[in-house]
Length: 93
Image 1 (cartoon, one colour):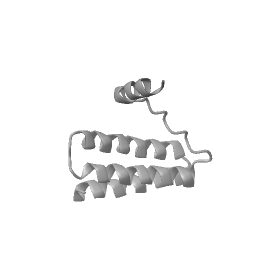
Image 2 (cartoon, rainbow, N blue to C red):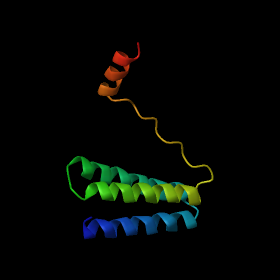
Image 3 (tube, rainbow, N blue to C red):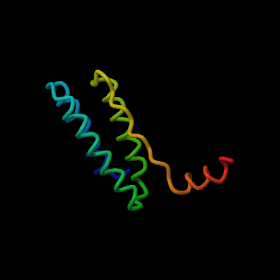
Image 4 (cartoon, rainbow, N blue to C red):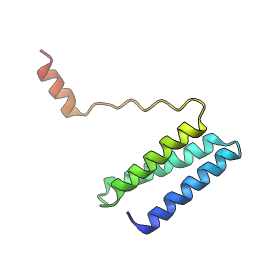
């Protein structure tokens, strides 16, 4: 992982926890969610280190939710890919 990205990760986690401790849990959660989206965008561009960054932000977001959210948000329902739909239709009968 890039050194600068590791520093951004540490800063984002620190800021999110600080927000939560100040009573703005939603703000901290949004901060980490936004950082995770950005990391995913980097991974989609093919940056070789970005998958590790996505994993770290995902882990940080999960830990944040467990520690600071009364009821962790439900995961987003995944939409099946076209290949999965075609496979399911072919093998359903």
